[in-house]
Length: 149
Image (cartoon, rainbow, N blue to C red; front, side):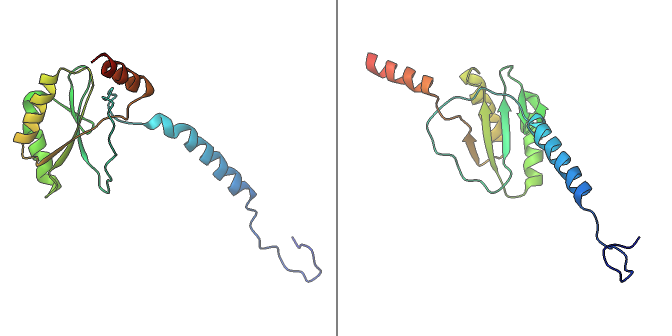
């Protein structure tokens, strides 16, 4: 049990190689599984040119998907209970009365306006619209339409 010298002392160093091996394996596992843990509702957002808004807090997001299903963040609600649920959520948030609306680009305009009306009537002061930046294909379509005019 002695090492190196002739002074008879014990080796008191910890071998860190197994710890490093375990940490690298865990790192690889988390890197592989992290993209699979994405949450939220899939929505095809309309594409427009606008600068993203800076945000330092967790925002309340209302989502309307292609099946006209409404979500408050990840909680599914019916249109009839949207106002009631949103009012309760806003009570718990304190003074923050700001909501972002994500709607699939193929949703009828009337549905989006009806949801916006319910959001406003629940006491929301500001509604922001969530969009995607335009793709090259979308820009080309807009240019083609402008040339025809």
